[in-house]
Length: 114
Length: 110
Image (cartoon, rainbow over all chains, first blue to last red; front, side, top):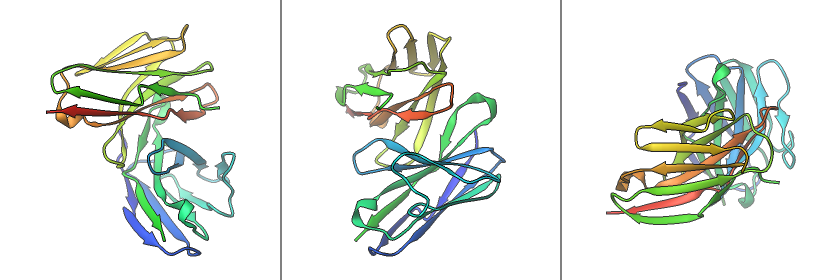
């Protein structure tokens, strides 16, 4: 399975600022996904990021708040913009491997907004 | 509406016992996947079961799928303290929409 890393692993940020989270995969993948996991909750898909096209956002998430880049088949970034305490969550990237349909996840970025 | 729903929400058992978690969903699926998450860290992929499969095994894990009842179960046999974690099911439909259930928090007491 793909090995996925994320940076930073955690951060504490002040409200009104922005944080960019990086996701690196050790192999080329077509589909990458970004999820949010609020404290004590399950995972919610933010957007799907395919290389060479605009990210597709789920209902309730907008590009101005969560801009995503996908410059190549092994890398993506998610920016959390103009943060508020409600954005305090774990943010996870995942990839779907080929035809297996299995999704594999990075270790997550734990964000606290004060 | 949420696709996967697990029950119970929380489960506490003694080491050596079996743990069973259930997942129900609402629409047709291509596959269903189970994950483990330790203390708010990344998710570990456990098993994928396809819609045309009824049972899969991996070590101490057994997953069943009943598409007529739109439900799946994850059985962990001979549980260990290290199995303490949250377990999530996630369903993928034919449009590759991937939806997680709320999860079951499993505590295995030594």
